[in-house]
Amino acid sequence: MTEQLVQIPIIDDGAYHLYWYGKDFKKTREDARAFAMAQGEGRQLADIPSEKVRDAAAAYLDGPVWIYSWKGDNYNNGNVVLHPNGSIGVVENANQRLPFLISYVD
Image (tube, rainbow, N blue to C red; front, top):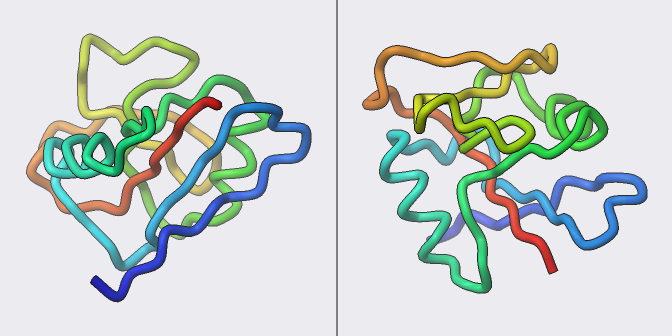
């Protein structure tokens, strides 16, 4: 795999870390969730805990990306996405191939 895991900088993030492989590395929602977990060390499809983290991530985007949840609300395990304008939404089709964010907490 030639893709590189890139950390998204978050000012004063403490123990929270957010990563992605870039806009061209796309997977379905379930594949993204499984891939994130397979990276080990407690990594998962991103749980976005605050506006600060949401805004830092949104600055990198040019389209929607898969996330697991927003502030701990996983929308009943729905197909949650973060958009470049910082809005959080749900898409109908989990088979849509989108970039995705990975998070973990030290």
